[in-house]
Length: 328
Figure 1: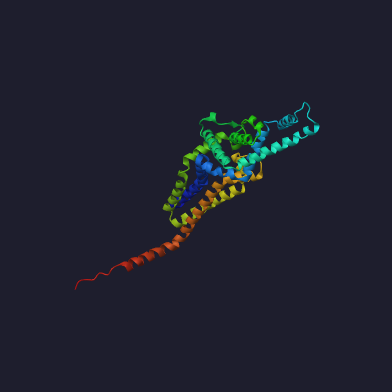
Figure 2: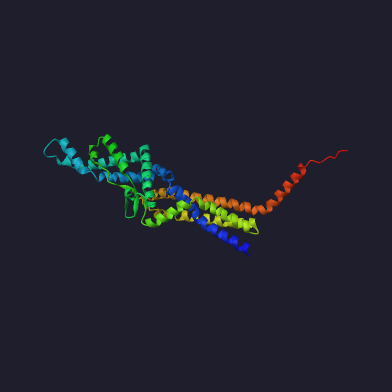
């Protein structure tokens, strides 16, 4: 009776721990580890949709600070060199203001397509990730900007870089530009208390869980009467669980992205961010599925292959025996 019940219990435990094993490893390697996190989100700097989103946000931050209409009118007044500017000249002010805004937009778009922006993006994510990790580990809260449950990456370095480019282009009004705290959302921390506890536990047990799962399967096989069959059943269950999790995440990627608290304007940007955040987790789950499928195949063929392998080895041993010749 014991040899029937214990393997079942061990396999069930293996499945339960397997459900959180891959997410735990993902959290450890991609969420809490700065290098892994930057490697995950770094390529977003070269994504056209993300670049456009950042360019629009930075342009808006700059335009909100300067009165382009007044700047254009002042420039026209200087050109007219009179106490009263002719109406025909005054009507050019909106056109010049629009052209100036277009110049700011073009300069911003060129900036986000440059290597300079890629470096700024990586640095901003390193700083932002360090802040988020501090919050999640309940350390250095005073250095983290948390407002309405949101932790965000500052865009001030991008604004500063754009200011320099605009001044170099001859737009003297750009001297008035100052960082205003614009940012891109990093993590929605509305459930910060829950996230602190869950992520802390995930980080502690990330390396233990895969070993524990394999150990439980090995233990189930050790106490079972039909070991290969037990391994086959366990591997099939574990492969199915991993595949279901991977498929579920792929289908519900938009919902999953919302849980991560990433808020981007365009659908293209949402897809890019979803791929960056969810892609590594989905890939790990599919690799785990492939591993357990391989184990299942080996376990399925083992009862058929093992006797033949032993028989072949025995024959080879007999052939290798040297006949003993007795002395006359």
